[in-house]
Image (cartoon, rainbow, N blue to C red; front, side):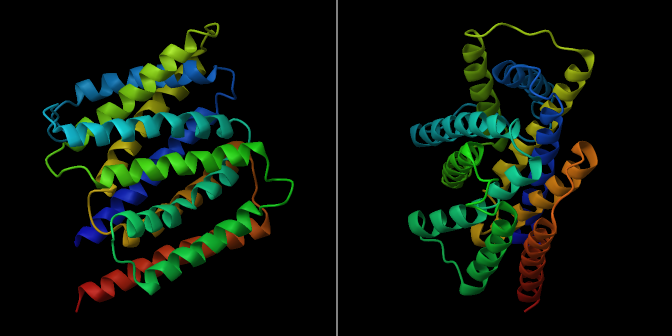
Length: 288
């Protein structure tokens, strides 16, 4: 497979993993305080990383000053994205939140074009814009559904954009597992310190199960998202982020009973079509 197709598979994998993590997190219903939940999830993820040390690739801390700076920026962005995203997650439907985050292909692609001078053809940009129009059918900005929690989601979009663009600049000799560990550690340490200001709540067996499952999925999401930004062209891979919306619609209905409106389904159809078109075009070009 071409690097673009491999990157697209990693993107789809990361979207599936992150959406499953979001679903498990949301099932706690806010009964576990936000920072306590993130802290516990992080401890489990770190334990899994230590168990998997070296099995999913090398992991070392011998990085250049430039790479350490980029890892620091990426980790800080991960903390910001986690806080704003999870806060919004507890206060709005999963599908609506995921739909807002589907603006990321546009922001990341534009960022790559502006800051990295990556060429973006008109067909790829058109596919991204059409997919974004599908997202707007779901979000419906300006209606009652667009509130302060939607703003939180948009702030999360900005943090994830910085995260992905900084990942793109990392040197090739920086192990993806090291970047994943830095992300998990930063969110865990931040949430642990923030939790000191609030009482510790008891955690039921069902909530422990949900948090453990979320830890597994978020770890997969972190690793796949790092790999995604290091393989292929951003302008090709970005539209496959829209597959996260399909996962959110399915899980939102199946787990929480949030049946989407016709406009939401229409938007999801447009989103899926853009990804299929991009995949078809890449396969066609690779045969020439």
